[in-house]
Image (cartoon, rainbow, N blue to C red; front, side, top):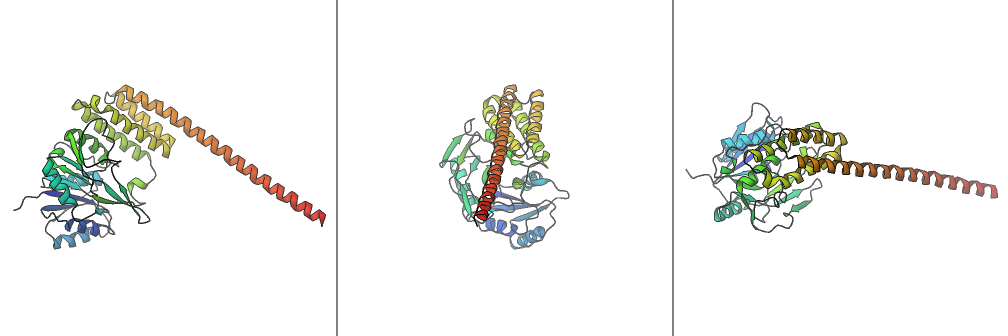
Length: 339
């Protein structure tokens, strides 16, 4: 039997409108020594039926079914456990590969340069069917040693990247949380020590208004972010990496807080409390908490200042509107008198 070069892992849940396009984009790849591990996470539409029909057409498709919903992270873990390829490539069931040569380009590059972690730019299919490109913030094809300065330069999603399967030894996604690929991003990069950026589009990411990333944030998102940060901190502490990567971790923590406070001031406060708890456990440096609290004060001041300005502008507009109406009435009355 020919060894599997790449295991393509596709978790899917209620994506009947897109799953066929996703799988067919993988089947059409010029690299044939692949397996496609499709993981059904207890969806309720016709996605499962469609995957079964495709599996009858091509034996490279393997279907795994969950008895209970495990979320995207648990689905990816099931795919990893069932896979046999030398490399792993993730793609969501509502996305698709940009061209027929994506996997071949990624595989040959990884083999040629012996890189365990390869990243490709991606395309974004917007709601109005326009395609934009994430080109890597000016990054060029080549090697990038992993240090504190590059950790935040690359997108955190797990799809669109080729991983040597050894990176996932003792590392898995967290079940039942949103943004499950973020903590894995911060763990796998130090394990890889170096990565290769291949400036060839890989995945077409489909923006959907019903997706997790497009919904208003709640306490669930806040707590899941904290769970992910704790996962990162424990890995860094256990492997004595905190001093080496704490700047990039601080930037991430501050970015998350800014996102949450933008959605809801209470979520920002809950996040601060969660980070304080991590600091009290000795997982997060105290100076990181100090910087975060400073940022929190500044953002709240900026937020309240903006609100006050909006209130004054609204009052001014109302005043001008009333004044305009009074002037019109006054002019109308004068015209009536002149008649």
